[in-house]
Image (spheres, rainbow, N blue to C red):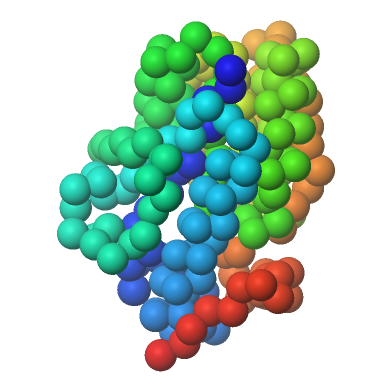
Length: 205
């Protein structure tokens, strides 16, 4: 069975979604991050996957997570040290080793990511070596692999418009069959807020 790993930072004011602070304020940006985290976990659980893991930064025991309600069914792990690529690669490798089956690794910044998107990615991963769900700013919200692939994560210039394209190039260079999902919108900049669903309304203080 496919294991789902949700990758997230603690929704702390002044630290979470800092590029949204000019539009929402520090508390508003953190509140939106908290809502998107809850949404992503709910969608992951709604797929009926046997294992849903929240890979957390900082560690699950850190006070930064105090007051953040998390579903009881969700396993918890620590992202550890290193840049984003190192942390993602390590989480993917560990999850693949834990369960002999495919792993989907996803972020929490995309309210458009639904249980249907996640389930379809899992289904496609049965017939492909990798799956990728891109976002409109050039990155991606979800990547799925059947085996560790460190070259996909190392030496990447993150938070740039070329991340998804470079990831696809690297996967192709490795001879992997890739399924590319629909392009969704994530919430990074103030301009992205036009795509925020009506069900989410950040509390600004």
